[in-house]
Image (cartoon, rainbow, N blue to C red; front, side):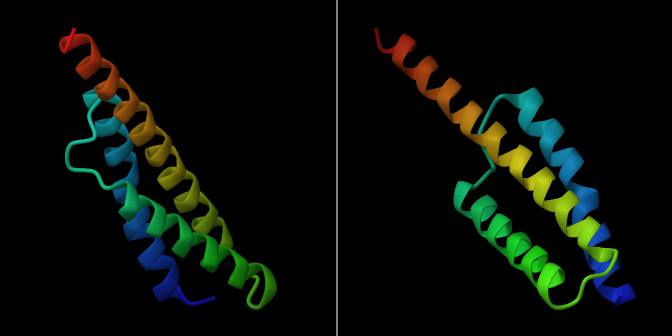
Length: 93
């Protein structure tokens, strides 16, 4: 297990609860990028696969936790985008 890899994942993971909270409360996609979130999910998925097949160690938990948080933020992005589109439709009537 690399302590530097664990520290990197802890640092990245520390930001996601704030991002999730902002997405949930703001109900807006402003400042978010679906492409960015999807790229992160792909990256974390790659890390998880690597840990499962080549270097199984406790850092796998951090990859899964980060993937879950990015997944939640992605779902909130999709919810917020739907809500924004519905509001636009209502406003254009």
